Length: 495
Ligand SMILES: Cc1cc2nc3c(=O)[nH]c(=O)nc-3n(C[C@H](O)[C@H](O)[C@H](O)COP(=O)(O)OP(=O)(O)OC[C@H]3O[C@@H](n4cnc5c(N)ncnc54)[C@H](O)[C@@H]3O)c2cc1C
Image 1 (cartoon, rainbow, N blue to C red):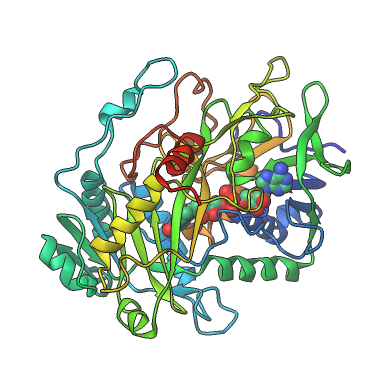
Image 2: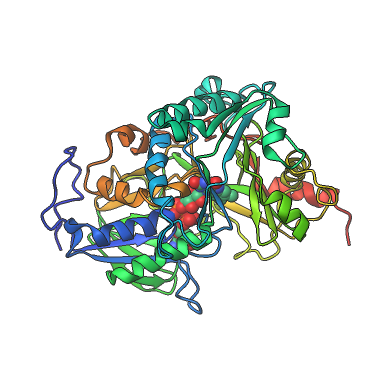
């Protein structure tokens, strides 16, 4: 099979004529599934066979994506509240679709999207942290230029205000909260957080699991996509070209183009040259009473960009508390190393890989993270009886983090017919209605101009340790999961 598309051409062209006869997508999370949907509806790919593979269990092969995917959870914030104007505008575009709620089949209907408002705050006393030294003893240059959480909050306020400026109704829904008391007032929980912020009533949250189920249904209805349950263990290639993927059970799938969209697992299949790393993030869930639901169900989402801590209003008497942080890395030596950077290199087998309750049923979160979640509860939702209640469930959820929090959506520079869509950096879910089309544009070598630099493959990033420095992260940089879990074991009494 020949293809005209995946050549290393710099033209942003109109490769509209029968570009590919087959595409294989590894991963059915947000990036993989939205791309499959977009491809199935674009005339350029009308004759292309589309296959999506995910680690879904053979016993329940209709579950896509895997339950431990970043894309599966009770909730995800939908906000145009970004310090970066391009992402703010992209969410503005996505929200037109999230707000469609008239028919039950509309994306935002049936509780999939709730526009509860979002309180964005920062702490005046928190300076931009300086990243921990890398393995080479180097301190990342950009650490010194990094925005603080407060800088991020203020830039974000400017961006959403500018986006809403064309419409007085939208503009009125954004209000500055100049101090702790005004923040407390809009929260309505008795708690507060941060020293300055604003409320954007044009933002909200989505039920992520329900939205992915909706999307999966839409994709199935196209009748165009072949879903395969199985774990890809390596990419198949000849001297210069990736030709397919090998599964753990020995099956091999070949295609004209292989797109790896394996979220935080991507680095275990493709050496990402230090551009993206899997980081584990803590989440805690609490069962609450009917009375607590009544109070907290009316709160807006609250996100403190200095601590990274956030709470999303509860539904069905379950409250979620989480932290958007530097996270924990989990470096492991892989038995099958990832595809090397180029046909003439050797890949590093030590890669940070997700550890989830699917491969470790006894997994808990480090004491450090749990203590911060507890602090968030005390600060943001200090209902009597709630603040000391044990979490019903905790979870480590995995980001594919890049230095700048920009996604990595590009052709591989050294392997023909290989495309990656990863580097979600913990903020991609809100783009569900639009990101698949943007990825398809990138496959067609027509990346949106405002994202061309941001999403491109950046060579030679591997020498420095990676910390995401967009100003939105809490916690400490450089934490290693095993070390943090061992600390927990030391402080907890043996039973
Ligand atoms: C705790 C947390 C909070 C977040 N909050 C927000 C938020 O408020 N707002 C927002 O917009 N975004 C948020 N995000 C980010 C958002 O959820 C992610 O950006 C998005 O879901 C990433 O999608 P993905 O497709 O890249 O990865 P995933 O959803 O993880 O999908 C990757 C898929 O690849 C599969 N896979 C991996 N390896 C293999 C293999 N070898 N073979 C076959 N299949 C494989 C996996 O099983 C998985 O299904 C949050 C993320 C987390 C973890």
